[in-house]
Image (cartoon, rainbow, N blue to C red; front, side, top):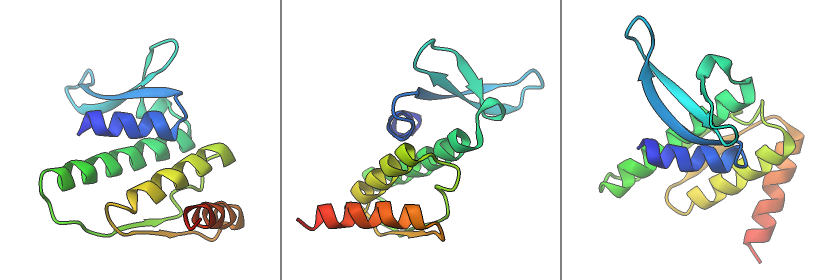
Length: 130
């Protein structure tokens, strides 16, 4: 599952982060780490920007769903509410393209009140209908 999430994170961050890992802190509590592409430093979730933290969360959701589906799990709708709010325009575009691809596997419902995200999604929908 972490391998799948890592691939999604690499795509969603446009290659800035390449891998999701788990570890434990000094009090033996589990935590997630992400690896930067260059230098290959590991960051905790708390050290990430809001946007990258949201991208990590989306990558974990997509990775776990893909893992579930590939193991024969029943497809279920993916409902997302303003998950792109902290993404810049380029990463929003990439995330929407990823969600459009994911919608071939299962139903994806994305709610937003941001006009820019609506416009980007409409552009992707228009391109996929050609």
